[in-house]
Image 1 (tube, one colour):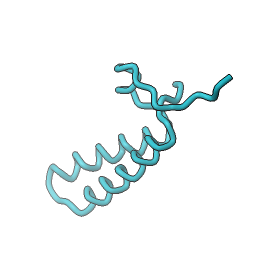
Image 2 (cartoon, helix red, strand yellow):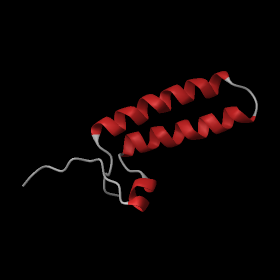
Image 3 (tube, helix red, strand yellow):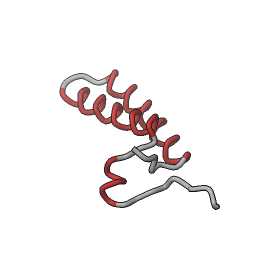
Image 4 (cartoon, one colour):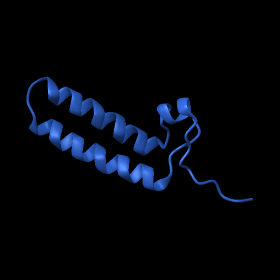
Length: 67
């Protein structure tokens, strides 16, 4: 998997993932599991730097070094 997320994109996903995780832990009922699932997706994509939806739609926010 080639990284397709830039640094700012990864930071935003990490912050969003942490916020969703905190909200999910405070909630009750089925919404809790939805928030925790979204938090897991956001955090995993932030750590790996790869987003499958970006790949499908041909989006790449990763700045490549100029050669």
